[in-house]
Image (cartoon, rainbow, N blue to C red; front, side, top):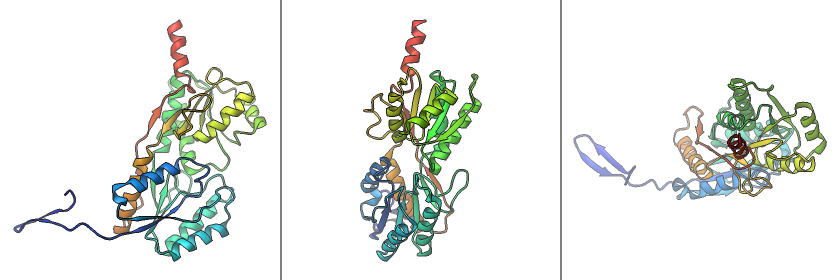
Length: 316
């Protein structure tokens, strides 16, 4: 009965009737086919206790990197005409026009009086802040934790690699990486952030030649998986020659050629937090914008070289 008991001074205790109001929420997830983290987050939304009396409505899928402003306006118009109560939006990344398109989407929905909750990332780069609620993890701290782990595993020349047009979440991770390199208690090489296609053999070879990294923080598991394949083609061994860590802990992180050490995002909790955040926003529209942060943890597998470092230490 939690949440339905009301005590009235001088009168007694009463049981309130549960709210029967139902909402229809739109889901606008352009990167669903490119970023695996969103499918389990949406599953977490559907499974959330707060969502049991509400409807989740998928909007027309956007192509992600190929999305145009016209397509974004069309999708928003359909959601608005459907009279949804709110929209969960995962802002575009890997798109040269992402900032303008993300702004178009959120402005159209806001102008129509529809609350927006952003998933995983804001529509502007850290440390700037939009006017919308954001549900995700503390990406700057996650970047620090991932990088610090590589340093503790023995890496001294650590790079950060992400794909072009980094999402704000990845910008935060890159800042956390810089924080960890700058505050390390051992002598480190300079911090450097590279934005490239991890499948581009020539671009990856150029980074290896210029910086000779012995550790790489990848902006996501997908980036790490593609980079692993390229490094194998360049005869670079993981973790013997270069150690890797990444973010998300999606389903293939444990089955790539070298099991991937990665920051785990608890998608069921993120989904539940998103539903709760939306309901609170609808019921209290004047609240200040919030960062709703769910905790994460590091999953240690073979790619970071921690096991290899321990074996070498024991052999001394």
